[in-house]
Amino acid sequence: MLGPLTGAINVALPLVQTPSLHEVRNTLLFEFPYAKDAIDFALIGLVGRNTVHFRPLLIVGDPGGGKSRFARRLGELLGVNVWREDASRADGAVFGGTDRRWYSAEPCHPFLAIAQGKSANPLVLIDEIEKAATRSDYGRLWDALLGFLEPETSMRYPDPALQTNLDLSHVNYVATANSVYPLPSPIRDRFRVVKFPKPAASDLEALLPAVISDLSRERGLDQRWVSPLDDVERAAAARSWTGGSVRRLRRIVEAILRARDARASRN
Image (cartoon, rainbow, N blue to C red):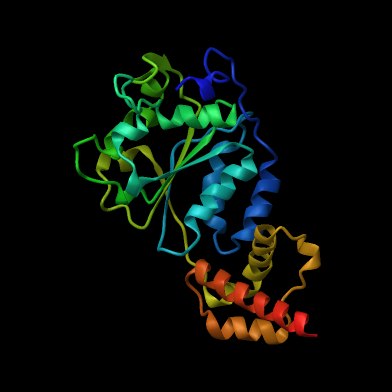
């Protein structure tokens, strides 16, 4: 169990320095032009800070609006390691660490995020937190989170696998949810809550460059070699997408680019 963690145990780990927030904001506005208020809300807690650390953030919005991708890109642009936790598949015993008496003993996941990124202030992304299991057989994720979200307890977290206190007070937490109503009030009270909007049809022109850039990265291509959509292609995208899910827009643009590639290969 300790093998992959030796670089983080009894070692003074660095804190990632806060990058230029102006540059981070501009990049996020390019990728999420419809979410200016959410971007500013997320970054305001970093103003004046030398290292990346902010109060827990809960991003709430309808499915398909890009909440999870926004949270991931926020961490990447801030330069911190991003550890993603799928709340629907997690429980308190897993997230909070498994006692070393068990063969499957594992430290708490915030410490694994620290060890993975080799820095003391990673970002733990808890996706769809409202879908965490409500059964208490192995402890609810919501209950386990409380000890990590409070500065006093996170500074001396008693890890059940390592059997020692860990200082996890610099870890950043971002959660996403479609609605806050299933969440117990102690969890809601510990997060700053921001509404993440869905784009409208009028945002199409602003979204297309970011979508093409993202698809180019996934294909391993330099965006400079991928031409913007022409008038016919943009009209086709506008007919098929009338706002709403960014995931659906990505699929539409991907289909248009595939059709373009097919035409080019025939010529």
